[in-house]
Image 1 (cartoon, rainbow, N blue to C red):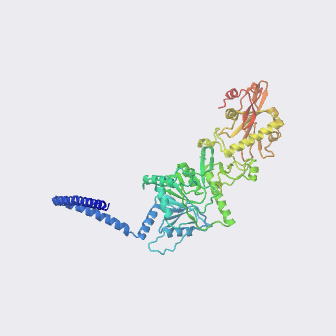
Image 2 (cartoon, one colour):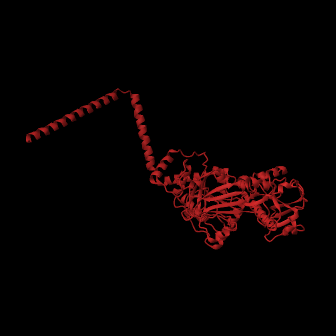
Image 3 (cartoon, one colour):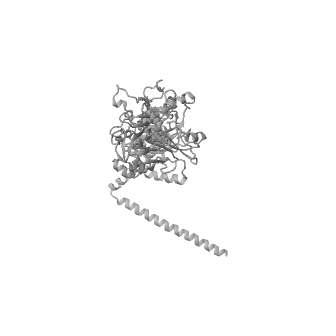
Length: 593
């Protein structure tokens, strides 16, 4: 056994030696051929290859030495330079009687020296708003400018244009009282808006991405080329603040129906439907977008800005990281009330400028017993201001719809105004009758109908109102009056009409009964000042003929009494209203179109 083991060991050693000899032989042969080829190569080719190799090595070495030799200070300078060339900071929404502008601007310039800062003033604020910085660092300049948005007859159009003072591609609108801890967030939002693929596109604002989804999205964004310097980014990046209340929803969808004088706010929890961000936030936007809007700096800011962006089709992205809040403002009741009053006045001017008469709010909230009681009488009148507590973030709460009408009150004139050639002014603006006027017209009609039915006056719905009643059972969107014809023999039954024959009469509910000066017909107005109302047209029935009694015009047309015997009914504004029989034939006979 011992002899066999020795023989196996000798065999293994012999095989290893033979293998090493073979390997040495082929290595030596390869080296001989390489040296022979180098000696046979032309000198020029060898020189060229050596030079190319040398240049490649030198280039790689210089690049490596450049990367290794760049100090943190140089990197910081390059980052600051990129931010300064890309962003102009704009403060638009602040109040002169209490603000944190100086500390906010100081903080920004400490993080990014020589950053361009623009403060937009509303008119001539008093006490005046100013800023002074103690420039101690070498090379630091005064880059803070104040521009008054009010009209000044002594300035040129370019001086009045705030956009002419902005020389960067992007504008970052910051609210009052902001603090930055580093420039990282500025760099991130710049990368976000420069990316052609929005962050979290189509994903709910409150749904966090899983690790795999986030990695997949980052890879997809890396494949998309960035936005070119000359290309306008039609997208807004919204950056929230860390101090925002989590119990209230921030995103709101805006639905504008300008022909019907209506704006609707709907609380949403998805960032891709965020037309308006309610809580404190910053806005990063391309200057090219601002140039396309009719008045990008109009107050109230940013609400008016968001409405213009909605009409222009600008998309929004809610950034997942937040800015930090500065000093707390409006802690006292006096300053809080003063700010609320300014905001109320700004929203009133906004709706007047946009010609909005109806505001619809759809939000999630708990309905109190007080709201239920008030809602039974036609709905409470809410503040025009859209505040940060518009809707709860708990979307399992009931969806509450609140409607406010602006104008057309008892103490104000009708929005319809004077009518020429049966065409109100808003028809030429491609608009319908303002909803507040339609509401008061319906109220007046119901009041007259109740009066006639209580005292037993024989009446019938007539003309345009009758035509829309049989077609839609509703009031026509362009209606500004309702005609009710009645039997003149029943006039004495109504105390209101009887009193109004001699002089105008105001009944117990404030409706104004008056006899027309251009004929012996009556009109019931919503009030003495507000002339929206119902026309009462008297007809006299003689045998088989029905004749107008003392009034003239296209409405005063004789017709057969057969249309009134028997009377029919039509559903109009939720009530069964008396009308002639064979209604369509009756309307054709009167040529009502």
